[in-house]
Image (tube, rainbow, N blue to C red; front, side, top):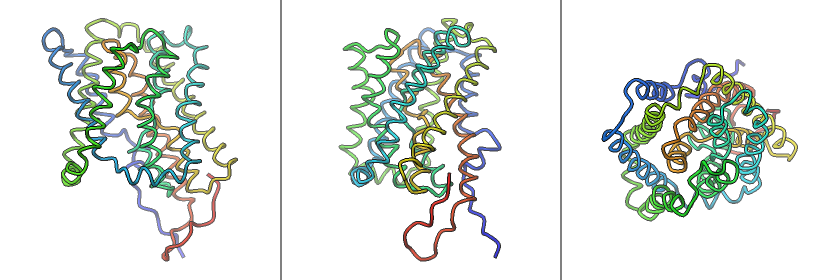
Length: 343
């Protein structure tokens, strides 16, 4: 009997084309290069970006189901491996890349690479990739959620430790993080009883609002970089080197999470979740954090994260499609997962 093909979702298509959201990001960068905001316009755009960041994290808090987050604690070993990859393995890889900084990467780009390595894992793309590869989707949702929550504390601390004086980690910086990120998130959690039904009815509109907020942050950061002339330091050779270094970091993260999950005896579905959640980085969380932590210097800092985001989508989409074809067929009768296969 011919094996029925598994439906292909958006990650599978990303292996053949650039994601429309990434195309929008690139278009926003081009707009900032051609028409950067300056003077009073820059102030207005910056204030709008700050408000958009607050709204973004309010929506994150409103979407998070406390019950699902608590239920996910039962798989603590899986979440521990994902957290170790996100906040231990990646920073170590970033420090190791410091040997290449003087020759291949400028100081600003290396700062951005270090910041990329301390950003939390993503939720949306990890869940979509895990679903395509027939992994443990509920665990992926919880892993991404825990990573985002932990990242509100771990990312600023690690950035201040690894990057140093470039990070605005003073009392004022902590207050800015609490005001722009943590307080809106907590407000969303507190009001979730009333806001969650509204969000459920308007998912598409609010998804556009999410992405519009990120695009505004990108435009603001790159506009500041253009007006200050910092992009003159980013030569094509440096940019190519950055892509190469980001690709190596991604390959090492994928290999390490796959090997660790297999050695620790996780079942196939959980190994899929660990690989995708442990190797992906969140653009939606990382960009607002960079805007708060680096202020006017955020432009070159967010470039490595944007490049890595596109790389992880394309590479992981190919892997997810391949694992989907190798996965056992779902049983018509509910029961335990099928026999594990190597991933």
